[in-house]
Length: 341
Image 1 (spheres, rainbow, N blue to C red):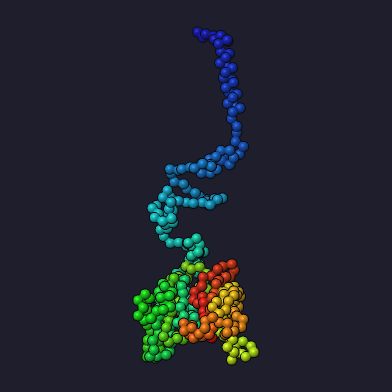
Image 2 (image 1 turned 90 degrees about the vertical axis):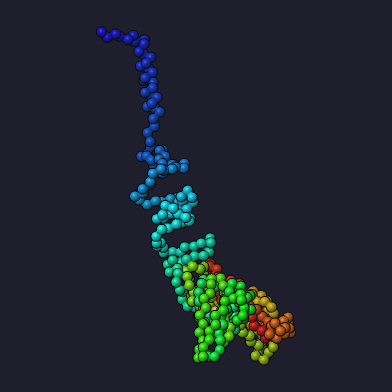
């Protein structure tokens, strides 16, 4: 037999249940967009807190980022094809690239599109290497080859890391490497030179000198330089005048291609018995010529000193910089030369 519950007992429960249902309904706010696009910050999407997954993450589309992204293991190394990277980037396998790979803050680059390793184009350095002129520092490893048809003479090649030691080297110098060429009817010489080292040739002036660079893509823009100094008498006496105008002819080649470096801005300065800064642009042959004003021999300070070959006047030209298309070129070869009169 059922028993009726008095209304005054059930009414509070009914009222409480009704109020609770209303509160739940009003507390719920439906998302204004399809999650997770709006107000539901889903993991690995729009969440702004550090998130960690214990399982694998599989993407079937392109991974994009609006900001700089760093992919790293907890040890700070990134591995591709390996789960135990030992370096900042450790790749197990081949790498395909069409641009450049740089180090040292972008100053040293490997031009992958250009081949990166191997030999570059041969550069003619015959004029630059005459008269025992020191060349360097070499912007990459490479070889010097020299040839002369004169027989029964010797051709010496010196190379080392110290420019002064190379400049003063003799066949008995222990601090430099020596290569000797000899022959009864002709002489040839091939000498390896390390990156950053200097070299010079002595003995018979060679008829042909070539530089064969290795790993030409691993260097910054470089200009091979050659300076030829000359003098001419000042007017009106001309060649017979003891007062001279000195000229410096600068010839530049692109190190990686061996082609003339045209349109390059060359800056330099005169010293010793001439002074002043100069600037000019190379022509289509990679050549620019600088000249002093007339130098009176009576104003020269060298005074016929024996270290200056007994000349009354002594003029030095120094290349300070070579730029093209806002790029500063490293200089390889002669960066200065001197003439006396």
